[in-house]
Length: 609
Image (tube, rainbow, N blue to C red):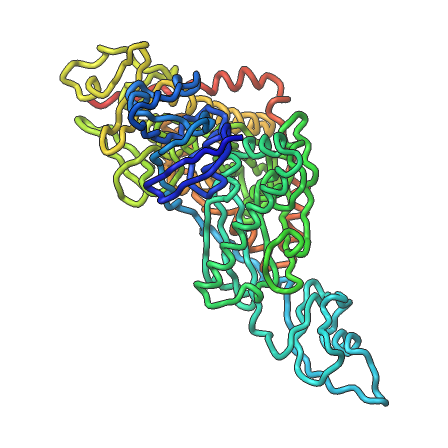
């Protein structure tokens, strides 16, 4: 195979490769950022690169996918999708994206509970052995600390030497022995693994104080931006897919542990327990368990039970003998993150009718009704995370999180208060809300026709119709064009229909109406940027519950923290996972009719003139 070169002047890089190598894979392999929302399937159009043309070179041909996803202006400028490019000659490219800082939600509502972690330490003084007293070191240590057993690998080398030793215990079992008195050095980590972001909190297990937080974009993004893409990667790479995905997330956790410890002045070998909450797929990928069954019918997970394993067994570097506790799931699509949220919000004992929702690519919903928990998961799609949207992006710096269409102009609010770069999930929802309110989009989801507004109405100037008659509304032209297309509205409409139909299906099963709800709890990253009027303005929830919305933050991380700090909480979440009655929406009677009805947007209010 001939050798090719890809020059990237802006990054000061030159990549050597073989003819036919895929450009996107090359960039990812060399840790060069590529926004590959669809995992290289040619569906999202995000992985744009500018191919610089050398004099006399023939322009590169465009694939059908590129013709569909790139504008004529972009094609004339030499913009290509790197996932659609196989390197057949030396190339010079200019990167069109850079990785931005992603805003990650770490905190939220914290209930009261008793702190009694499974990890503990006890220092003891050991005397020197004698001919008269030859009691084994293990027996002396076990008796001195009241341990039930000792891990054979925990014992120090060198035999029974006199001095002070500290036993590290986990549920009454000695898992490590340290020289000297190290009782005050007892730390743990609470971790929330999301599909997009990972959050880690370093905790003093004595006081329960969170000493430092660290967060990263999930390193598995290189193998796909969403759960299904990563499962597909594993299917397409059966020999090494699971291992690559597992190493990626373990590496993310290691990096966060180091960052948090650096902030707090703690060593990673002083972390004795880690507690993890994640969706069911992410938990499979963390533990290196085959996730492929989750991607095909009947979507049966390999496991849902809680796991208590040595952290080192999955490549996480912490203290000797450190344990990792993985919270339990309910089903393939109701994971430990939702079980954690149910415990944090005490849904099993909460009074009245309470609806809990964590909105993302999947909208997980739990209804608490007279001490019974009903739950379901609806395929909201990636639109509400800014994916599959023409101007979409993750919730990171520069993402538009709220929109207002006023009398004569548009106002955009961005994360970080910087120039707008695109629409994140809350931004696209707010944009559709405003399009409905301003009369630009009808309740059917269709844009009004050209000429609907008077010529001097600024909405007429921004309502664009292309050569094929496709309509869109331009929210911003500079520095980046931000528009919402008919396809974007349909994506939100499908997400809205999925979520609302999930709500109504649970309520129907419980025999109650939306008006009977006493409280609606919004959890997770998406809710942090989501005004209540976006939920009601787009009809995801009716206006009548707008005064009953409460935002509870990152309950997944909080649940992981509570399990870290309390053995009793671990038992509670394990019991709770069996109390949650899962309902498969697709198998619900008349669900298709319900979903179709829920697609309709609410009738528009009198729009602004």
